[in-house]
Image (cartoon, rainbow, N blue to C red; front, top):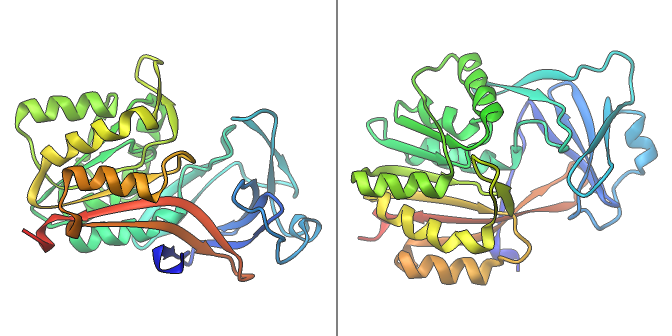
Length: 287
């Protein structure tokens, strides 16, 4: 339903130009890409043939989880950077179709900047390349960045340096194990964000599914939040809908503290594209 939708937006260095027939056309600074998009099941505003006259790269899947980038222009760069406000993020073509940034998270970056106190502590779980970590550190808050993949920690450190920030604390660990240890240590945070994939690998390559971990994650972070803290959870699992997220959230937080929404972005051609679900918990609104 429309009232369940939270619309996020692009900015000067990112734009969702068009989507449809299983693909999306995006602008990252001056570079345009075409990527597969399972949610783009509708007709695009412009035909793909027209997209290809504009784009620099197109990603073609070779199996369910990986593929190859094909250049559509001569001398198209494989790495470059874009900005968001005063921050800088490195982009790179990966075999998993991603470029190192999830721009739909812009609405959550703004939420963090608005709600996180400079004297607070912030925890970024499944932290990827660290956009939310940089946003949090920019406020002055003590920031912990947790991811189980070494290469992503290195990438996130690069983003911190290019954004002229310092002193983000890096933790290579499974998110749930780290949460359990922080609970034992009695640590607390004013802000927590979790952006778990639908499935993934732990630090030692162990496989896990979000369906089996989400309740334990919510229970754990509930114990880490201060009485005036906030939580952001993003989910992309097709088997975890708004009703299930709401049910789990209400087990650990007061219903009036919780907001569960679908995340959407509109293309320049007027198409609406779905990007998963978002839970926000703001404890200080209701004590």
